[in-house]
Amino acid sequence: MRRRGVILVVSGPSGVGKGTVTRHLAKIRPDVRRSISYTTRKRRTREVDGQDYHFISPERFEQMRLAGEFMEWAVVHREQSYGTKREPVLDAVQAGEDIVLEIDYQGAMEVRRERPEAVLVFMAPPSWKELLRRLRGRDTEGEDEVAKRKESAFREIENMARYDYVVVNDKSPGTARTVAAVLEAERHRLARVDWEELRDRLLAEAKAPSPPSPADDGPSRRH
Image 1 (spheres, rainbow, N blue to C red):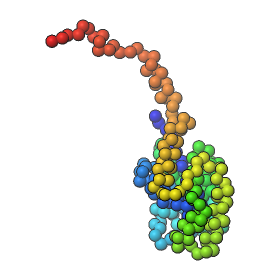
Image 2 (image 1 turned 135 degrees about the horizontal axis):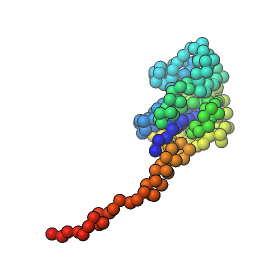
Image 3 (image 1 turned 180 degrees about the horizontal axis):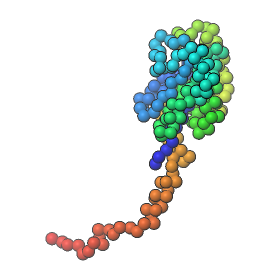
Image 4 (image 1 turned 90 degrees about the vertical axis):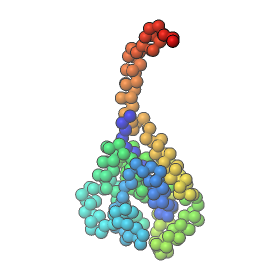
């Protein structure tokens, strides 16, 4: 059956492990595209431009926003802008390919407004204490930045009910397998596949005269 691609949104608090899970997902399902977000925040030491994010200036981000290039965009943690370019997402859907968007709560809601068929997965930490441990363990933000991310995390968890699925990221490989199972189920949703063509073909085959069976070809010969 022909089908349209799945827009799979993976969202959750900063530090919950979204990036690690989506990298594991890519190993399980190498046929799934990964959307690379644009951001105005500074690149961290181990991050690669164009692979982890597209790191751009605030001026360039504003140009893209005004040109309507973003499917979603948001100011996160009070001052950093993030956005998903629309064109690669729609290209994947039209080609019947699945694409994963790793974005925050605000972005997830914008995607849902523009593309109601998008599948939203909320990734939760096993506990608040563990989330703080992960945030501080990254050694990439000072306490002021951690405080901003805690504030954002609280708001995101408050809005968990607005998602389609929730998974607890205890161990990333297992969480990735759960997300892969969600994706596999969504690939077969009736609204996403050309089921009418399959139905019509099967019914036409059922109505067609059956070919003669080998037993009808004449008397059998024994040697």
